[in-house]
Length: 138
Image (cartoon, rainbow, N blue to C red):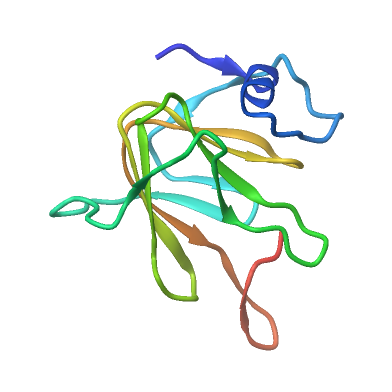
């Protein structure tokens, strides 16, 4: 699998990241557990496939939306038809399920990009324990 740069990804998808991030840095593609700020990418085994999954469109999917001054995490397929996403359908830690047959990418204005290798994954919000348990804010 060939690597692409952050600049190539942002230009291809029209997604802007903060200017202090280096555009010529390579974005590696991993198949294991990953984190991008408050978002976890957890390898998962799914029996029976993703019956409610839809193809990730060219515009991508905001898997965590920008709320209260935060930034969104946007999922993009590396090529048309290579990533399918199924929202979990409930509020909570699990955001949804991702099936990738070619590289997919998560972009975030502050964190840059994370490459996701072919496989099945659960996208999950991190939680923290303060006075009460809550989702981590990015």
